Amino acid sequence: MVDILSNGQWLSDIAVGAGTPYPELIVAGGGTVSDVTVRASPSPALIVDGGDASDVTVADGGGAVVSAGFVENLALTGSGASGVMDSGSLDGASVTGSGASLVLSGGIATGALVGASGGGAGAPWSIVTSGRALVSSATIVGYAEIASGQVRDASFVAGPSGGEINLLGNGVISSATIGSGETLLEQNGNASGITIKAGGILELGGKNGAYQYPTLEVGGGIDVDVLSYRDNFTAGIVNDDVGFQGISIEQRGIVYEEIRLTGHDYFGDRVAVSSDGHGGTLVTLEDGVPCYCPGTLIATPDGERRVEDLVIGDLVSTLSNGARAIRWIGRRFYSGRFAAGNPDVLPVLFRAGALSDGVPHSDLRVSPLHAMLIDGVLIPAVALVNGMSILQEATGEDVAYLHVELDRHDILRANGAAAESFVDDDSRGMFHNAAEHARLYPETRRLLPRYCAPRVESGEAVEAARQRLRARGFTLGRDVRRAPIRGYVDRIGDGGIGGWAFDPDRPDAPVMLDIWDGPRLLGTITADRPRPDLPAIGAAPVSRCGFDWSVPPSWPPMTVRVIELRCARTGAVFAGALCRADTGAGPRAA
Image (cartoon, rainbow, N blue to C red):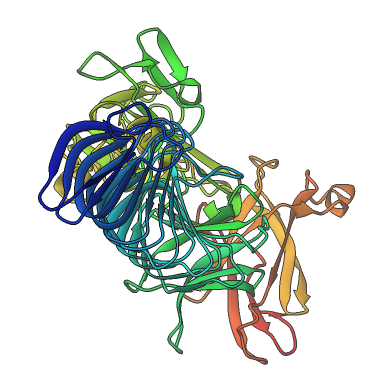
């Protein structure tokens, strides 16, 4: 039996489908229904064909069709529930049932479209657009597939289980933002006007797809799925004379991929390059992020514990507010090649006793922007570097960071020193596991950061602290400037130079060398190549201390440069490293 509702007829708080008074209900022009539960039926039990419906819930096995008219708040909550719209208008929908799906093949959808299930290899997508569907001014949460049709002025946001938007076929996305924990897979569709926010990723995986110059915000990433990642890839911002602005992915001066960007000039921004975890190459626009290095000892009610051993829910001791539970732990990793020579990334080392007697009680390593509580104010570690008791490392090793978040910003004890917990100042997306937070706390609203103490980066308070700690460094006799490194430049020619270098105090630790062209830093190399000949002749105690550097291919033939190699840690000119590089005839000694 089919019931038709039209011409001013109205029903509320009803159930339709098998075993109900309305096995099949058609809401035609002039008809209105509200507070409807759609139950299992051999065919869709609710058809909105010209009428209006609001607050429709589709239960297990139920189905609803919108072929004309208007539907507000459609919820597919049951297992196998389905919704189809081929014309008409839809304002707000959610897909939370296992195996439930919403297919938009026509009409206009607005409001919040929540797809919290589906996605992944072989699994159904919870929201699918096809045909001539138009999704406009909508927030799409979780998983969706844009097979055809158009999505514009939309926001893609991760749901409790993450999120993924699959763009393929004839699908079009324009003027959209990709939020934290969400990935937009550009397969074969067309994407334009895309803004990638912190923690969001645009994956370029299609051979026939097209995208137009996305805007990349700090913490946002672009995954070049079709470019196999290599350990010695480097990436940076390029603004050239012919109008190219974007990211260049290179290996030893050879460009493998260029990604055009828009939105701003990106001048001075840094880019991290890493594996995307499944063979491709991921680039992320970087900014400094406050963190602890592994091995840091965090005070807890049961004694000190290594930061990498802590888990969500553990109690930590705060400076003034007793024991508090960990809400989240952020994790970030940088390859040694990216970290080398990068002051935004390289750890700051506080020698034991650098801040006061016994504080810290052992060497403490934190990220450059990690704030320490000094004289009642929070000061970034990098602002306290004095070259003696506090210095920035120049490591060639991989750098890992962790941070501890409580329910509000507070002061922890790290190796006995007062140091901050994490506060989300729009930096959560910098962590590789940012999506985990979105899954654990989907209702979290973005708020302005509230610090537990004044945060200062310059001015009288900073300078007073710097002067006091520097004087303390002298008093302690902790001048950590390294002894002159030893080595030699023994290859000059073939468009480059080579040699060997080691630190007599730490011969097993690779030496980092900065390469300068006058006032310009060209890059940093690591003296870690095999040189088995050196121990044999007594020149060096280790065999992995060699280095090689090639003249950039961008230099025109016969170009002459005065190249200087300096110790990255101290800035001292490396003996024997001053040379002229002539790309036509090869470098020659100065």
